[in-house]
Image (cartoon, rainbow, N blue to C red; front, side):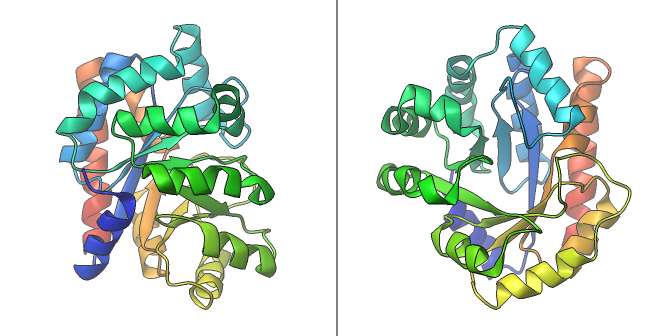
Length: 265
């Protein structure tokens, strides 16, 4: 499994836009999550975000919140997720990016947390509530351990702060396409195009766009606007929660292929 940066370099060298699906670990169960990671890896995912269930997911919309709640009610905890990742990571080509909140990291201890996730094969880390002012406490040890910490830019982020985030983000920069939480939306806001142009003037790092993308045509639109990656979460989580295990895995595989096909054209 390559690093996040190495995967983006390969994609840029081959003029490809990355597809990054997101799923919640433990919903409907960890065995299904392990299978889902393999299905996504084989169906066009270039990198994969894996959400750790958390009791107060401030950035997540109703679909992902519900998935996290179901996983927590079944007793899924961070150690369970890491044990599952340890088993499945050797079979994956797409680098794994762990999505979690800052409090669990602080509770475990930053260096211990980073060592543990690196040991099981995680390559990247996304912490949506990590304040920029406290980011160095995570960024520096993460770099030493080999974990790339991806920072987020919101539509409301001031120019000076965007510059600081772009300078410090590792692997790529996550551009949040809307103000608010994650979720499927019927239309994307055109200001994403302006934000991408604005960010291109200050950084050459890859930029991934997420929040609200749920259709192949939306993924293609984001690519045309100039994104290096399309990030899709709630639409995958929803499909994975419906029907039998085999039906759900088939659904996310087909959806992943359709998204990748759209941005490949």
